[in-house]
Image (cartoon, rainbow, N blue to C red):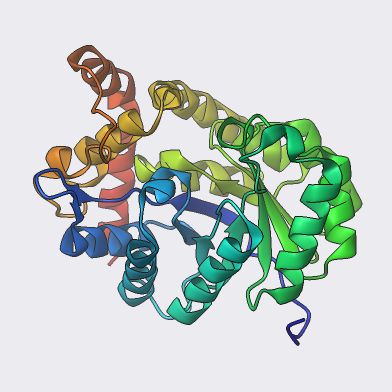
Length: 325
């Protein structure tokens, strides 16, 4: 067991699981563009970055590539800027290896999916024991990651999450990509935010989550309109609830095309965010890694059309920020 002081949860706010740049000709990482992207996101008002989340295509990366991206992220953002490392794998020893790599790279937290490759064998007892073993040996505080779509439909309910947290002081948060505001309500009622942070796993229910007691969100759409998501959070926290809800509804409609998957999210980031970050040729460099394919021309046109209005607000927020510098 690792000796440690009482772990603190991630700070409240909005985090983004950053996408990954590849050269489609060589199938290798594009580190210059990646560094510029990390640096840009860190300056948008987002509270922190998730490196090697689902939207980084982490399960398509080698262990060495994972380490390289973590090290690059730490160098690309301010020293005290929070970095949450995705460390998920298929078995306990592998996850612990990834946690060691993340710790050595300077990450602040470890985001951990349950191991669920053998779905029928992944019982509640298996899940509890897995998190117990990982939390007891991890040098980093653990954030549980609940995402049924990538875990053989395994959906952790609020009761098992509660049990895991009560049994393990080093488990300090959860990302709920399941979309359940009811779980946010129950977990926020059970644990103070100073002990355990509950994050929605998408931005389109950020207001609902905040109303239920969440600490914020960890949202892929932050790759596309980071400042817009931060604006929703700030409006709510400043007590402007009607404005927050109205803008949330607008952003949620824009987010809809990304529900089709990583290809749409990366294309949207390529055309809306990469240019603001000073990155060229992003449409080519943000294609999904092989064997996956970029969106169809019809899907690309839909993304441009549906997101145009929010992009205008994102540009206004960017100009306002630069005007204050």
